[in-house]
Length: 300
Ligand SMILES: [Zn+2]
Ligand SMILES: [Zn+2]
Image 1: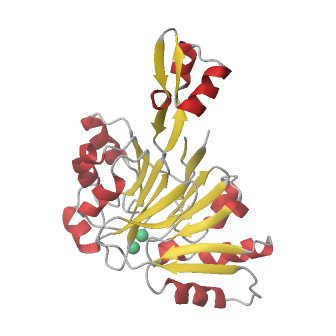
Image 2: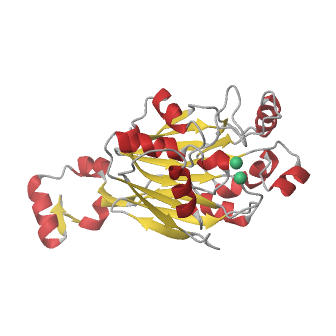
Image 3: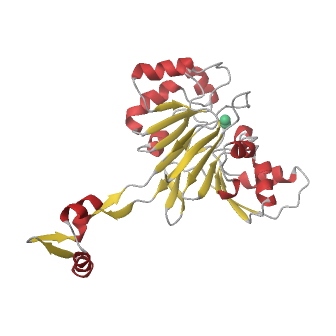
């Protein structure tokens, strides 16, 4: 297992008895990435048995309370644990708002909160890059500035193990391959390039609080895991007014986005249960769309 995605909150607006407000935890090779931080997120992290100290990055889609009110508590806890620095990405004014949230209680801050404000990009843009991964972001279509994010593991060149086994290559073949770029085996010339292949990196996308926009498709395309809001079932008028998505829209773009797993979240609390959602998905025969719930986990 390389990592996992854990939903920490799946309700829109306010928490319910069963659902907390929005947050998603991505664990990847020892690092923790938090996407949004609704009130109570840190408690959800503990309940899910995730390591809070591994969180080095927080990505905020927008500044509505149900996506950020968990920040002061979480940051204070990281500080108590002696963490030196946390990097936060968000839309313009994120820095002053986080400072405000942190000033709201008496506490001697030591942790450095490194906020990077990003103007919502019109088209998909790489906003951060590390040795092994990069983060893409693009503007969404909400009532306030809002961005969607993708975490993309960089592609790697790896040896084709099966082929190497089949060809019965030895250590001296590899010396030759390194030196000359080829080796001779049973009268055949084998080039180094033949033995290598590109291993596509893992891609995770998080889309929430938006009405329909082509940017969703551009960002989410070919993701291994897509977590996407489905506040409504098919109430298009409401979705347009409050700038949210319907399940109907997600089914519409299903083929085009070509994602391996789609997890729905941010459900309106007007639904006592999600049976109607389940029925619609089943009707289409799509077996890789999941109805998210708190602590829903996908390993990869
Ligand atoms: Zn929301
Ligand atoms: Zn919102």
